[in-house]
Length: 231
Length: 270
Image (tube, rainbow over all chains, first blue to last red; front, side, top):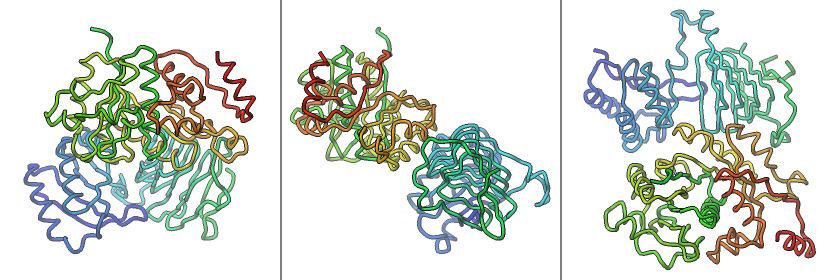
């Protein structure tokens, strides 16, 4: 039987914790193992308020169970659960109800067996609505947003990011280091854009992005720095 | 059995944008239109709604007494001194947000619905923590109050995302404290700016001008909506009518500052 694991991992530019709870063991048994892992790693955890993603695999988790787990991790270990990875629809539903991000697969895992397969880079996630402040979308391929990305929202893709509306929030393309990644927006008014390891922020004088003309622009790395130009 | 009542939470994310004033004024205006209205102050520990309504001296029991079984719901409801259609269920001042949980709030709302209130307005605390979750738990509709400023709009955006996650979709928006003159000089976001950010899934319910009358009326405990002589009160009365499904045009908020303009306005109204 696979044991419960707790490890550090990189989610985009952030260092976070990943808790893997395999589907085979009973829930109580799994919780006991979680506690054991947390006790073992008590001193080496990423410090107070570290962000945590929980990977449930194919396990089905009830909302009440998940809520109790998240509360417990926060109360006793100051671990802030931000996302849940799982293929079970009940688990996904429970995570969304609790305001957590819910993913089918771990950001950073490619669909194909080989890391550089074209399949993984051609794997796009379509988000039909506006991404609002406080929401975070992470995906191993490209991300297409049908609406806006508002200030305070974050969109992190291993591939390209395409925003049909206004990009006001944070976009990070090529989050696993792909410097060829691009960010395209119907209107480019971001707080910050990141491509691979590069960070660019909006010019100070840009100010507030009110209603205005749509002028699609593209951000990409040229000569080692992020450049924005018309599409 | 009459038609089921509507349960609407008034929320904003950011503090100080006018949630409590908005809840009090809409409550008063709806009651004046003949609706049976219950106002719930869900801001436990920071009780304010009683002040806005001028009912602070009449509180005997509060919502925590009700959920903990020390008082019956009917005992805790305070009838408004001006309009018997309006009641307030006050918050406790000596406790905190953990004193009432989501299930208890849902029970209180269900009991109020059984009393045949047609509108139940829940005044939500600021923030996105447990207090917000409790206040929204019993609601089926939401009013988001935002000021025309970046911080408020961003927090409103966050709140709308959280409301959508709780399946409180298509919230209604009130833009509060608008100053037309500053908008004209591009010193303040316009209503269109706010709507642009929040998107078209959010329906504009009303625009309330920044009005000194609000400050004095809140301090006196006489919601501005009761007074015919100010624009903010008029805006709240219009909001109440729109809530009931009437088509009411938005107020013309062009600033008229001169004494004669104000006098003229006073006459025009009648």
